Length: 73
Picture 1 (cartoon, rainbow, N blue to C red):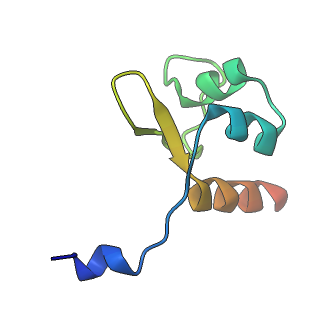
Picture 2: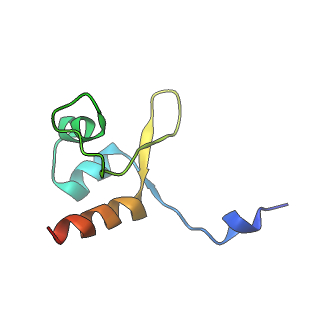
């Protein structure tokens, strides 16, 4: 039986390669933005989700909303 809450949700997860292309920044810049110990940490940056033992991704809609919010600055 399918959960009705999840049935209507269409989420796309993007991996690092697409994240870098979408944002126009390097992989290391993405990692710096998600690392609280980094001077370049950005608490507003979309949080990655764990996909496996060593794989992460981002919900594309969250990334798009973050970009849209930055465009207003």
